[in-house]
Image (cartoon, helix red, strand yellow):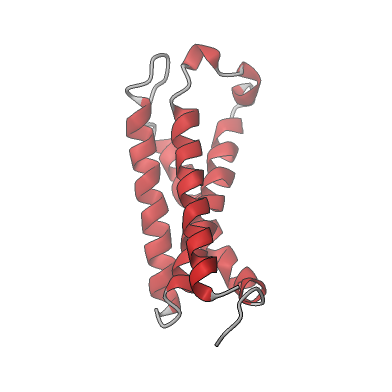
Length: 135
């Protein structure tokens, strides 16, 4: 697989991830399964792991798309993109009936998840590069 194809695939999956998050945020609060939020911090774990996936996707896409980009910069940009999207998601929920958006603790879980996902690329990038064929 060429780097361009893998980068395109990662960006497309990232966009699909974002669409899925916004779709879930658009569900009326009364239609959400209460079992998801029955435990005190269950929704924070959901936010953390969902945004860890986003952090990994964004940072992996950046690292494959821009191989000469410094690692620290790729990590920071990936985290910033996903954390900003978390803020957009929390704002979006304000316009969904039965939902309360703008929850700072949800956004903090999103932010920490983005950091974890971005850092995970440090462990997985070499494996991702195995899919690449260089000319």
